[in-house]
Amino acid sequence: MLIVETSALDEFAPTWAFYAARGFCEEARIRDFYSEGEHKIVFWKHL
Image (cartoon, rainbow, N blue to C red):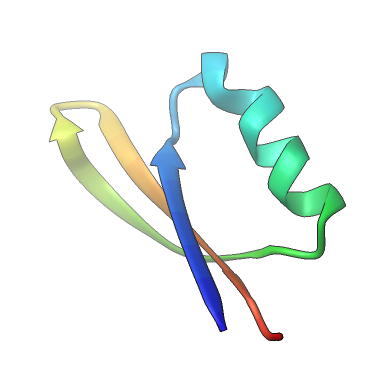
């Protein structure tokens, strides 16, 4: 499996689309991970 993570800020929407286009699914969101109001999104893909 591959696991990638990125910020949930709207400016990272192109990053989410990049991962989704390559078969990654959102596995989890960790609230306030980077700072208050900036969550971490974890994406997962089975190989």
